Image 1: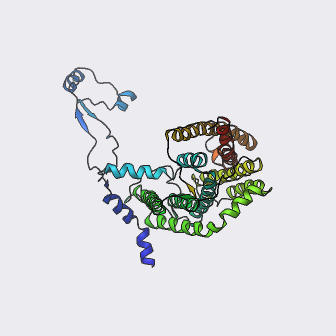
Image 2: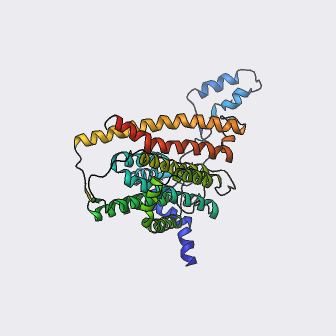
Image 3: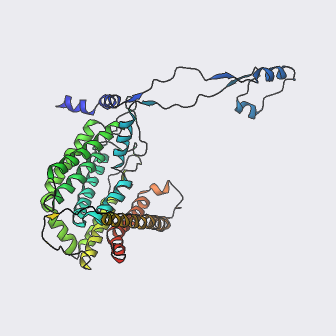
Amino acid sequence: MSALLAALRAPELVAQFQRQCGLVRLSPPQQRPEQRRWPQADTQAAAAAATPARPRDAWSRQAGGDSNGVVTRTAIPQKKYKIENYFLYYLFLFAATLGQEVFYITFLPFCYWNIDPHVARRVINVWAVVMYIGQTSKDVLRWPRPPSPPVIKLEVRVDAEYGMPSTHAMAATAIPFTFLLATMNRYKYPFELALVFAVAICTLVSLSRIYTGMHTVLDVLCGIAITAVLVTVSYPLWDAIEAFQMKNHFAPVLALTLSFLLAINYPELDHWSTARGDTTNIVSAGGGATLATWINYQWNLIPDAVSAPPYEMPSLTTELICRMGARFVIGIVIVFFARQAIKSVALAFVCKLAGVSPGDKQARKLLWVEVPYKYITYTCLGVVGLALCPAVHRYLSL
């Protein structure tokens, strides 16, 4: 077993997969700096010979001029890999974005506004829990990402984070399979086809983390396995959790307090990375979503079902597509401007309390600056996305 685990964790396996997918490392160039004689070099050399010698100034040294007409130029840094299969290259880069903030901040609200709030609430709850466990596990285990070389790294932003488990693989397992479980008894559709689609999304995103050189095979497999256990264990509790979030008067206080405590007590970092900030964003959005759910229920903003499930899938008419598009565009515009405004105010407020400048990028990495301002921002965004935007949609009769 130990030999198998070591093989699955080996960076050579990642590099082999990259080569099979057409991502090939280039050998380092074994050449001297490029020397080239310009067309006017002979004329300049002759003129220099007829001119009295004088010391070379700093400018001429920087320019790399030479009295014999030969110009020495520093070699331009070249890309360290070659792409032999552009289809797989762009496919895996696109798949990798399905585990980033830009996907979460668009897809999850889209589900709430245009598909089914009942389903979206369950997806958000599971996603927040799974991602928190995955992110904290990285900084507890502290297993490094695969080294380069032999692996080719296609991403830079999260390279400072640890690798085990892959949170992309966890999100790519949690979201489609939670979506599947939440809808299979609620809507009439071909379950087998939906299952194949969920497996395909999970597989594609997981393989993209190996292709981009961010994770070992073991990181990915552990991420999928941990999520499968969490989804299976939590599935019987989904209805009870949603009922608590809607009806219990202490639900908002508990959610907001718990999300802040989880973020502020994130495992201590041995070096700064984006992990703590990203985790704060996720749990804060989950807390804000719980507050929005409670507000919508208490204020009778959740429409009653006209019949019992399972429901027929609606036909995609032109009118329905236009309404969905309008809801999405209006909602995203609101979320975007709200994010910018709330982030600016929250950052200025927290920095003032901490006695640091909002423009100081190093100060923004401090625990009591980074966590509070991100907590305020994304808690508010959870409320904006799940309470304010639907209210605007109703006002506009969308």
